Length: 231
Length: 386
Image (tube, rainbow over all chains, first blue to last red; front, top):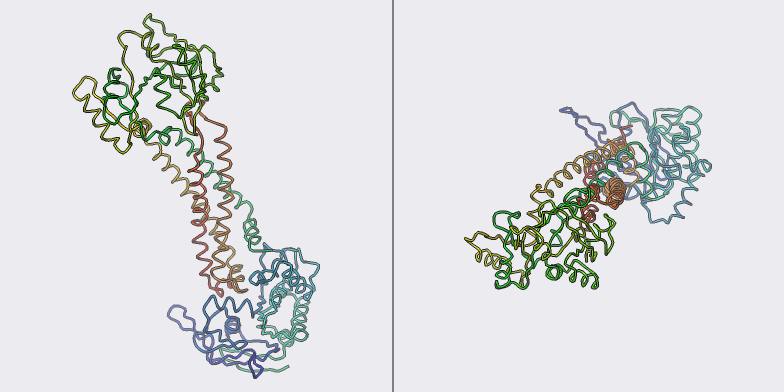
């Protein structure tokens, strides 16, 4: 975190894709600040650049131009392997389709990021138990993803995202594949992680109800920020 | 959980596919072990042939005899330290096919001195030296035939009949020799040349099949061979002298270059298995594209992903190859599948090492391309695939 309390500082961010001879400006000079402890919802029509922005905040993709600073580190300049190590330390991802590894149990999936840390087996086990208890799945430790409901799978996904105590939690339409009830539970869980555990969360969503759980909402359109709504 | 656990779980996600690939690799390595044993059997003796021994045969062909009088002149050749001789007897025992074991009339003392790798108990050696109709036989043949020391063995002549027209030669088993090292032929049946020579037809007397000689310095083998062949040049019995290794190799080559044939077969087999295992790994990686992208998202570096995939293919190859070599060893241990025509039938240590090397190479080669693809996978591209 910087002296001004900002966790994320994005300046003049551009991302250009080329499809054949066509040039697509997905992000066009976007500037954004996210303070520590924020819960930010990113909304906008398809193709507005929400997921691309999220990917860049998480170091999954590099900008064509501009700077991204997260917790005082310029991630737009990092090499692939440095970014991988940085992600392991600082970022937790929650995906729309959960993206659990079907060959591993719930505990195995949650433990996966910890294999990159120097923690002992016993310490990893303790962390996994804590993360699964936070998401309310202590009784599903040995279940495989195919034995869980969609909502439970997403809870495992969230447990995996928080197990290494990341600096920022990035959620790409976390309720996009869930029914209303399961969505409400997941949103409640994310709100609790933000309010009670102080996690900074950036969430991409199409769902206005989901966005209401965030502290503020930013509207993107054609790669630029259009509007900010504070809850 | 650890990475090894993850690798194992990934292999088990498509059990049928993994099983069939494992079986393919297993069969390839059983074949490898078996063919290695066959190659050794056909090149019998090449590896254990003495470097300091030369063989003198008739220049025209091995089947043309040489006069035993050559022995004295060979012994006088500069560089020669010992000489002995042997002859192909032919013959068969009971209803066993001819050639089930080789019968050789030899000079007993000279032969045993020339071939110290034939180990005969001293008392059996003394008994044989004193018994003109005696014979010593290799351990394997004795076991196969159920012969014991002291037993009388009638051999039916197929080439050399006795002077009285009889075709039956009776020998007493005076001793059973064993090989000093693995790979020594333990099937030979050795009899006294003197008895054989006196009892056979007068027309064929005083002729031998070939001479074996020892030289003082193997470095000068070519010079000694040239001197011997020059000694008998332009005579009715011209000679051709070669090292024992070249002689045995030439003998094996009469039925074709077995090593080359077997290498060609194994190359085809391994190439096929490489494609099978490579295809399995490629499919496995392709259907896990989004999972690999997730792992990268979580912080697994490209190098770590490469190692995980290579470890998976090495595990597949190691399991299949290891079980294949083990099964091959068990199969070869049951012995010569021809019932006696391949007297030495085992997989030499060198081939076990080569087999283990193939396991590693197969694992790396079959996993390399999928691993490189996985390593180069862009996260955003991988996450788009469901």
